[in-house]
Image 1 (tube, one colour):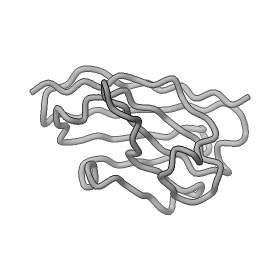
Image 2 (tube, rainbow, N blue to C red):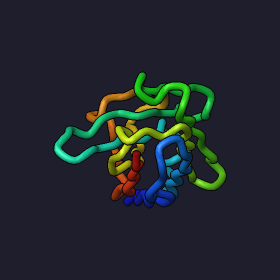
Image 3 (cartoon, helix red, strand yellow):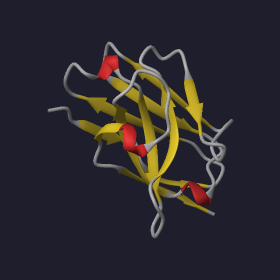
Image 4 (cartoon, rainbow, N blue to C red):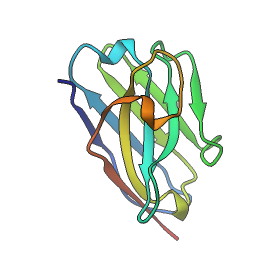
Length: 124
């Protein structure tokens, strides 16, 4: 069974930065695309970004493009989300995900494993 553990969430002022980390157990990590989703109170979970199994391709939601950067380290079974220029509307629980495919996708229905989530709160 694969487990994903996120860390790095917290409270930050608008315009600030945070770096989320996600550590995966098991050997499936390096052979699948991984990504991040988020869910704000009262809203559906939404796609944020994904990276292909090699790390060579990335895909971002328009709302975070140019501000967020996803990266992965397959040797360490880690995926990271660098979040800059944070806005109050970025406030949400952020979830790490392993997809069932190799290349970048955005559909939550293609997620094979979910993390437990980490809270990010951006104050204005």
